[in-house]
Length: 411
Ligand SMILES: Cc1ncc(COP(=O)(O)O)c(C=O)c1O
Image (tube, rainbow, N blue to C red; front, side, top):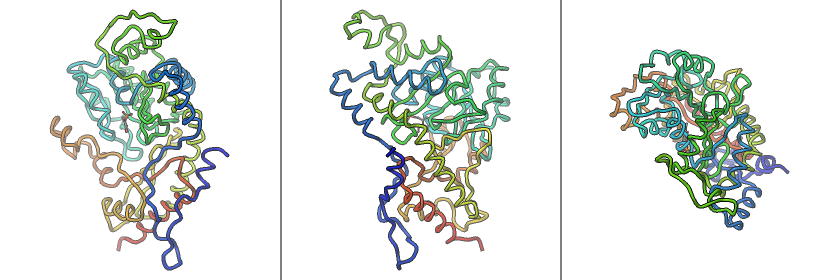
C-alpha cells in the first residue's frame, strides 16, 4: 500500500456524534499541518547515523542531483533553510548597502529580512486580488536607480505571473529571485518552478510539502552564481568537508570570502531524498483535498474559495479561504475561534509584512499603502491540507466550515 493510501484510509479520529445525528466536533484536535514520514526516511537517517558521516557529504550530493533533475535546473545547492537560500541568492546577484529589492507584502518576514541583512531595502508592491501574488502591473512604478532584483513569492504554491515579471526584469537589467518556499511541485505555463527565474529558493521546513525538518534548496542555471552560493554557504572555504576529511581529500583549504554556515547535513538529506521521490504522490493527494474543499464550499455565500489560474499547476501548500462579510454575519477572527472550537487547526497566511511593528515603523508603512493585501488579510484563513490527512479528516474540515458558515447567515 502506498503512503497516501495508507494515510487516507486511517479514520484517525472518529467525530463525536451529538444526539445520535450529524457529528458536531472531532474528539481530537486536527493539527493544521503534519509531515508524512515513511520507513525510507527513518531507515535513511539510521543508515546515516551508523555510517559515521553526519554532515554534508554523499547524501547531500545525491539529494542535490535528484532535486536539480526534478526541477530541470543545472545546479541545486542544498542549504539549511529557505531563509539561508534567499540570503545567498541576493548576495550572489550583488545586493549590497543601499540597494532595493522589490517584493510582496503577502509573505513571511524572512523574504524581506535577508534583504536588510545585506544592507538593502525591501520595496513592497501590492498583490493581485485573486491569487494574492505580486501584481506585475504595479512593479514598474516601484523601480528606481537603486533597484537590483525582483523577488516574487509563489504564494500558497500558485506561481506568480512570471512572464511579465521576467520581461520587466530584462528591460531594467534586474535579477529575478523566486521565493518558492510553498512551490513544490508548481508549474507556470508548463514550466517547472525551479528553472524559470535566475535563482529559485525552496523550503524544507517541517510543515512544507517536502520536509527535512529544517532545510532548503537553491536552483539556478547560472554557473558563476552557483559557484558563489556554494562558496558562501560554507564559510567562503575553497573545499567542503568531504574534500578535506575523506581519504581522497587533503587537509589544506583557503578562505576566499567571509561566508556563512548554511550547509545541509547528510542526516537531513537522508530524509529529503525519499520525500522528493514521493512528492508527486503527495501533490496528487493535496490536489484532491483542494478539489473536495472547493466543491463543498462552492455554494456557501460566506466563503470565497481560492482563485486558481488555468495556466498554473498549483502546488497546494496552503488552501486559503476568505470569509465574505457580504455573506456571513461574523468576522474572520470569530470564524477562526469557532473552527478551532470544532477541533480543527487553522492558520493565517500571512499577516502582511507592512502590518508588523518592525517593518511598519522602519519604513513608515501604513495599512492602506498596500490596500489589496490589507483587505485580504482581514478575510483570509488557511485550512489543513496535507498528504497525511485521512478521508475522515477532510470530511471533518468540510463539515466544520459548512456548519459554522451556515450558523451565521446575513439577515
Ligand atoms: C514564503 C516564505 N518564504 C520563506 C520562508 C522561510 O523558510 P525557512 O523556514 O525554510 O527558512 C517561509 C517559511 O515559512 C515562507 O513561507
